[in-house]
Image 1 (spheres, rainbow, N blue to C red):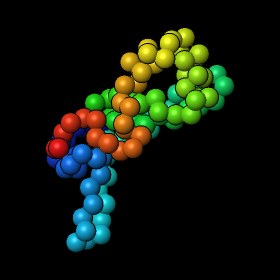
Image 2 (cartoon, rainbow, N blue to C red):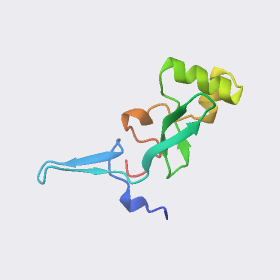
Image 3 (cartoon, one colour):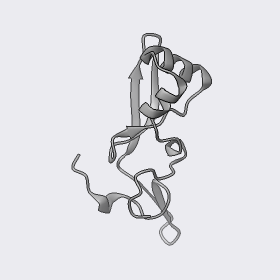
Length: 96
């Protein structure tokens, strides 16, 4: 997908709501990245605009991801740094 800043909703979230039309506009760059661990697949929120993901998941999945990648807590957060994307808080900084 070609990156188009005009498709990113205005404001602090990955969506915008138009009360006049009762429509919600979601950012086309917000989605999921699936990490296929040896135990099970884990879905992480992903922004394809900046090509980064979060690691906001259950404690069990967090530990599984650490084990799968063989890294520490801090290293996992460095690998998947978007800690507010799970709540659709805009992390790209565009159109705020």
